[in-house]
Image 1 (cartoon, rainbow, N blue to C red):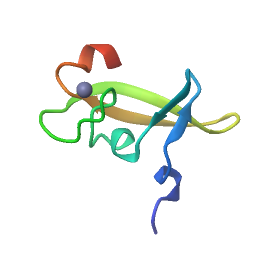
Image 2 (tube, helix red, strand yellow):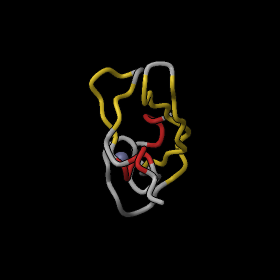
Image 3 (cartoon, rainbow, N blue to C red):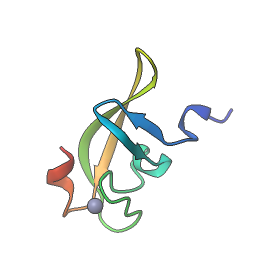
Image 4 (cartoon, rainbow, N blue to C red):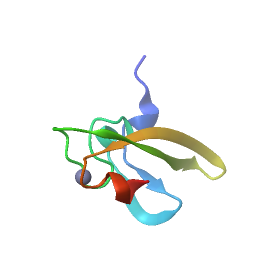
Length: 71
Ligand SMILES: [Zn+2]
């Protein structure tokens, strides 16, 4: 069963208008720049609001140059 909750980029409640891609939310790309390859480091978590009052928390990664900015 495919997980449909991650098919679209989700709005970030803390950053209005900012969208993250499926790859970013699944730790396959830098959460800041979206770089999908190279060294990716754990960068904490982001929270997305899928519906008012309903949130998902994602463990995300960042490339070395953006790791500090993402946490
Ligand atoms: Zn980056």
